[in-house]
Image 1 (cartoon, rainbow, N blue to C red):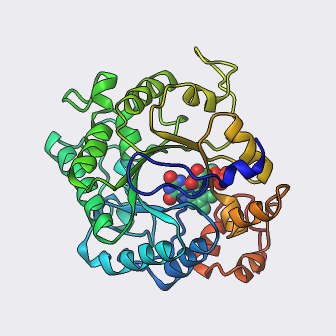
Image 2 (cartoon, rainbow, N blue to C red):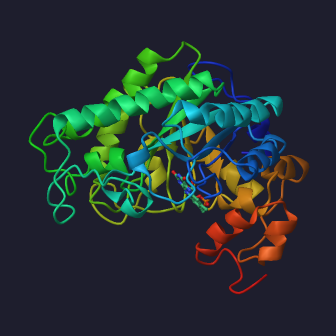
Length: 362
Ligand SMILES: Cc1cc2nc3c(=O)[nH]c(=O)nc-3n(C[C@H](O)[C@H](O)[C@H](O)COP(=O)(O)O)c2cc1C
């Protein structure tokens, strides 16, 4: 599709429409204060994004409980003490005419005890010596997601996106490999999807009619089964439980290697589903204007920009100005990121991403 199609608005089931088809992907950058409050660096980054032409920006993965932490200097939304900083982030996005969503995150079995995290596995077999969460504890975590969404609403965010990817708690519970529970949160596909559904439906009930809900889903690793995830997604789309589905692919062109959908693009396995009023987008090496346009042809309603947004903070504006825009090539020297306004904390985080920063560059 012509690149100009990317600049057409997109209505969502709740709240204001996206003014174009660009969404900032959630990007952990480890630059908050040690207690999870937003730092001056978080504000600077979001202010840059607000000026960059995105229709909607998700925050980095943000902790819904102190014990659910995975990363040092992770942004938090588990306490009212986080509200002033979050309010400032939401405000600067609103000033830039960018819709906003907090990515709600609990690390589950991957919570980091060195940071005060309390590993919370679905199964007693995942971590040696750590017992599976009790049913009551699962319900508590569900309620923490909902409480965090209410906090996001109070801070002035347009919505939240539930982090259901990469083996963190919601995707952990989906996995037949990581979840061998015998209560109502384990066993059948329906039971393994229950935590996600209760979180999404609970947020819908608790928050106002304009509040927008996204759900991020990854398909690979952690014992996740494509066919099952498709079935769960079909249910969620059919019920219009969410406003948008964000597919966390590492390569949006990825082909399914085995099983019933072998040979099809992973994306098409999901874009082929009836979606009613729910919008569907993908991340994964979306680094040029042309690729963004192609993804609309491949059935996406919007695209998520991850690494390209760090390389070029105003990626959507660049695409608007030049239909042949291509992101700068990785790796880049640290100095390039610094000149672009990234903090040392963010740059150090990016040094940990293979092939992003030229090794040893200043
Ligand atoms: C630095 C960095 C931080 C990330 N942090 C998060 C995160 O907090 N939550 C999340 O769901 N995905 C996270 N991801 C995954 C991205 O949102 C995105 O799905 C992935 O990078 C693929 O898109 P890309 O090829 O455009 O970078 C992160 C990726 C990068 C590179």
